[in-house]
Each structure stands twice: as structure tokens, then as C-alpha cells.
Length: 170
Image 1 (cartoon, rainbow, N blue to C red):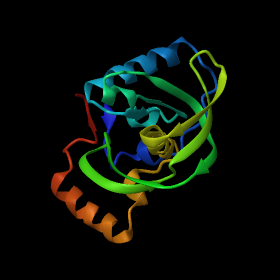
Image 2 (cartoon, rainbow, N blue to C red):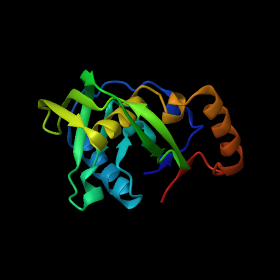
Image 3 (tube, rainbow, N blue to C red):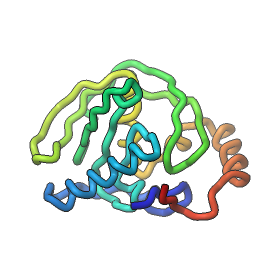
Image 4 (tube, one colour):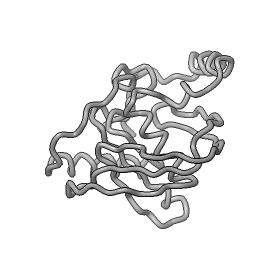
């Protein structure tokens, strides 16, 4: 399993809904989790590994040494509240970080690995990471949320720093 890098067309596709939660999906999520932990990411969306489907994983608790893998299949944002700025990075844009404005609190709905619908309130880093990964499913990268000036600065930075390949396998 490889992480796709900025410039790969799948990262710009709007992901399609997951139609069946089965053993193959569970296996894919296990592989994604292994990869995410290996590269010390907080989240990983399916399209970042070349699967244009609506699911992602998060684990912001690992930062405090208490790993708790969260799986969101066909996620929806039901309510938003407040604002927060946070310096984000992305596994698909290695080495680049920028302050992004996000909602501070969310109410979300998704399906778990058993196919059961659930709702969850998220705040702080969990809300930020959820929005970052949700954007991936919409074909949006965090750099798209920068001002035009900062997007142009990013493009110059990327020309100098981009990897040779449009994917990497850590």
C-alpha cells in the first residue's frame, strides 16, 4: 500500500460511497492503519492510498500515547460550531505545514466496520482531523483552504521540494 502524493489525480476525485462493508474493506482499513501508524499520521483517507471511496481512519489519541483507531465509513457532517486555527500537514504533501481555519466542534454521522450507523461529537484536534480527512473525500486538499498568496507561495515551495514519484511506500 502506497500513499499518493500531491499531483496524483485520484487526490482530486470526489470519492464514491461505500456500498458494502465486508472482509475486504476491513482488511484494507487494517492495512491503512498499519501504514498510518508507521508514518506517524493522525488520519488517512482511502483516496490517499488510491481508493476513491468514502471512508477514512483517525487516531488523534495516539499523540498522548493512548491509541484509539476511529473508522468513518460514508461520513457526514451534521452540525458545526465555532472556529479554530491549527497548523496542519498532510501525508500527501510531505514536509509542508500551514495554519488552516476549521470548525471547532462537529456533530458527525458515519458507519462503523459492523455496518452500524453512529453519531459522534468531535472537538479540538479530533474535529480538525475529521474535517481534513473529510475534505480528502471531496477531492479537497488543505492547501486549497489557503489564501491565494499562500497558495502561490506553496506552489513555489513545492517546485523545489516535491518528490520524484507521485506516491511513496514507507
